[in-house]
Length: 332
Image (cartoon, rainbow, N blue to C red; front, side, top):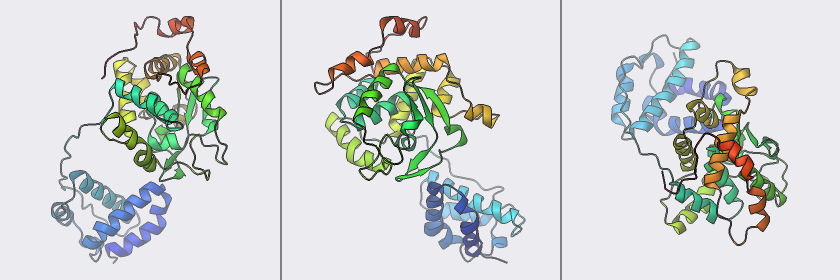
């Protein structure tokens, strides 16, 4: 018979090591701070629903954190059961605390325009990408030159960054392709003229050529800018919420919104992930987003940016035909 600590040590070495680094660190934190102190010396076979319920009720953590602890326990228990260490299910009948709905922070359109317009490079490009595409912070920091096709105005998400280290995207559905606007593509061409090459070919890299740490970007760059503009402090995820809200406001089809954000489960891995075709609707929405997010050109911006970023009147008419779209002048 094994104690919880004894089995968890085996599980850490053989099973947890197969997960992404971000998952490993979170689980190890749960084990060290909470699960080992409470369950460590208990025999696995003696842990039942009443034991787990008592643990949930005894901790003073938030409801969300307690639910995450139970998820970690379930991961460990699934292996323990599969490997023959236990035969029972201690989670049956366990009541989890309810998580209060928390308001999601997002920017108004006017705030997002100001953030993009006032930011210095290379953060200006990062924020514009975040606002238009809704990419996760780690996906933005993991974006490489090879993931951006400026001729077709398409971005491919294939990797992510967590705490400055490359890893696989959050989920299988996160591996995706989507359109960017003509204006953003034109801006990226100019941005790449002064881009500093690095071994990983990352769009955003440190002076040593390593990936940006999104937490440091928020702390050192985004928060000071938000303070200066009088906008509530928040993380890069606010850009993702804002992009989602803007697509909803633009009446983008639900399927298209989900695909751009990486939320759609594909029934077939090959067709759903690796052979995704960027359709015309995607380009239409991308250009509408680009039109309303394009920052006001500052005095320091090259004059040709305005010329290269402009979508021709004929092209613009074609893109928005039938949509009745006019760039809004109000916040969400």
